[in-house]
Amino acid sequence: MATKSDVLDFIRIYADKMAEHRQELTDYDQAIGDGDHGINMSRGFKAVIEKLPAVYEKNIDEILKTVGMILVSTVGGASGPLYGSAFMKAGAAVKGKGELSNEDIILAFDEAVGGIQFRGKAVEGEKTILDSMIPAIKAIKASIADGKSMAEALVDGEKAAWDGVEYTKTIIATKGRASYLGERSIGHQDPGATSMAYVFQAAKEVAEKVGC
Ligand code: ADP
Ligand code: MG
Image (tube, rainbow, N blue to C red):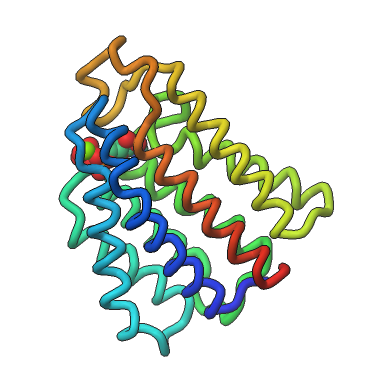
């Protein structure tokens, strides 16, 4: 079960991670893109943190939707609309919920994937955000089905996400800016898959803290 305060905690922790890993994400994007992924993500989440107090009193769905709208309006790169639609779809998935059950959390993740795919038309294996996100969600579902807690499932989810990040080093980018490089994108890890792995790391940290 996740409360509104857990969701706000998650957003704050993730925003801190985006500030902390700004240079790292930018370096990965420098190798296969235009070197702005860390700048984009940290700028977007800095705006989220600045504007978040205005929605503290709202429900979880409205908070997530607002995060998405802020990302869309403050991030110029591809990642703004992609992460933005992920948060908006996650919000819509949990409309009216005061607390999130494990099923709600999984549904929100699934809908977030749907939002990214609707926007970006990518599938797994194209060296994108999805290559850490989809395996992570699969691992979470499998662990919950095995009777594990959400905190345990998120440990498995984060591990699967980082395995997915490793996998992006072995494949050619066929979507986004990195696709211009073709074969030369091999050997480099995808910046977006990396920033997404931090989503699962942040969620795991919250779940461990509250023991859910
Ligand atoms: P831009 O490519 O516009 O500079 P960013 O550098 O912020 O934007 O984000 C790049 C990341 O966006 C890539 O590493 C990749 O993971 C992700 N990405 C690009 N296109 C897509 C897509 N169609 N679907 C999913 N993720 C994508
Ligand atoms: Mg870029």
